[in-house]
Image (cartoon, rainbow, N blue to C red; front, top):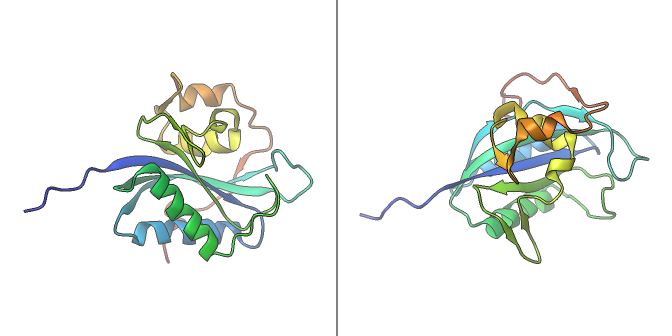
Length: 173
């Protein structure tokens, strides 16, 4: 009998502001959940957020999810990037408009840096649009010595509002 594979819990950030980003995030989560090596555990509410970095564009919709996976961190990143590509994500400019964006924010308590992935995500604790949805289900998650709830208390959340999706918004109806 084969031993069960070792699983890890990863935190993902999702967003978009082109087309129907809520539908795109839901589809991305369903695609991840259908994989034999990933299982969506928790999903935040959806938040409408002002653009960050490049501000002359439409508001974004953002959410976070926790995923149980047997994939190593870079392979999880590759799975997320493959979903973005399958959903016709085109990378034109940094922080620019996009149909879907999936970031690996954290992977267990792993800290790592390589040319493709830094964990925890280097800017997640500076971004209210990440912290607010992550606090929906992981307020006690510790990143760089502070909980998500603590990071959120010091974050700029100006203009970030709950977009009103019902619980389970990402599941097929």
